[in-house]
Length: 246
Image (cartoon, rainbow, N blue to C red; front, side, top):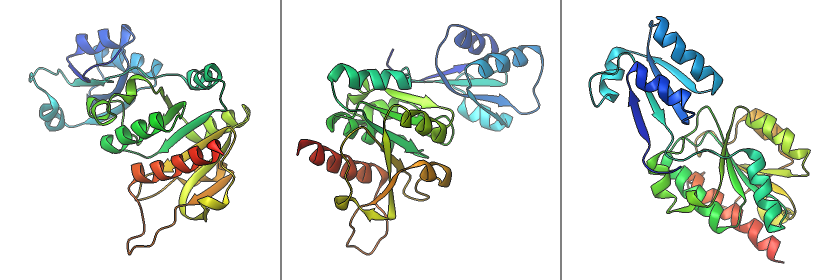
């Protein structure tokens, strides 16, 4: 399924969206509201592990197109998420060692879309994002990916560090981008690999970084100290491509 992200308003509409299996990225609920219908929606959101935010009436009014939100607004994904296993299967079908991008705290949809585009062109088999503190598959992400979202599976996971541990059992090893790391040209980036990219402000989170086998830095000669996340992803992804071509 793909298309425009949908803002779904009203208790019945939101409940039906959950029960139909529609992928809901975020649920916004009027703070202090816990009556029967809202509790039913919250139960459904828990089954799907949807991010729930309790907000003010003013916030809901500002998000609403109809003014009839009844205290609940859901934001559905523009594209369906894949499973991590789908990404591994993608690599198996191509007869290639897995190459996966994992994104930690990438909250800008333009950055996410650009990284998915780069992942596709670099031959990565998929992208993994966390449920929290991350942009979802919105229409902006789809547009910025320039169509790559149709071909590159994106999985959303509850725990990025835990997912890295599971993927290590599948033979992958992990390199994360950090300006204090070893120069990327001195690292062996061949074989089954996961490339971990954080946002340009905070970088990769400590728990995720600790799970990585190597830390790679991009050589920088200018006066500022960080690259845009999508640019860093592109530079490192293509170093992996270069080494795979050798």
